[in-house]
Image 1 (spheres, helix red, strand yellow):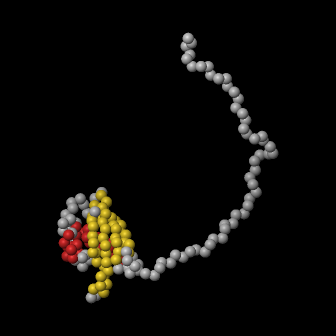
Image 2 (cartoon, rainbow, N blue to C red):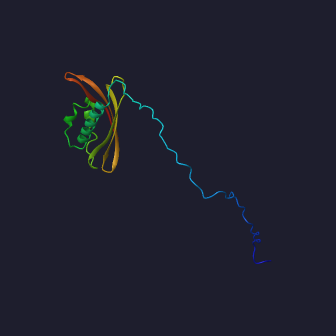
Image 3 (cartoon, rainbow, N blue to C red):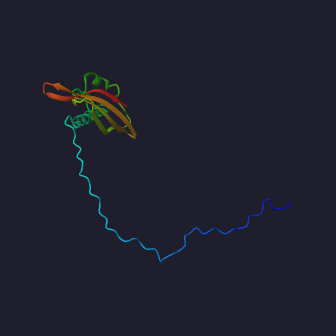
Length: 159
């Protein structure tokens, strides 16, 4: 029995040359061609269809949700929310008041009109308290008063 348990290596064979034969001189670049951009089609104008604008709803929602967070943090009196929120919502805010994890800061608000007449909108927002991010959502409606139309929060959910 031999000391080496492995079989002998096969003999080395040369590798075939796959390169094409050299011809001509050194490589040269193709001649320079002037490049002209293709004509651009006329710019499309996306026109917003006539109708309600969600900016007014978003501005109201931002202001109302900031006040809600200030009332929950006890930086603002509850009476200042009465014109902005429906009657049952104002009383329900007292239950969630008194968080000790820091001050709540509203970060982003998105309002989407939900009816073609532009009188109702769904609002999604998020706020931070300390290092945590929380969500809130509400539904706002435009109501008619003696002084004219105004927005009011009719549903509110704090997460």
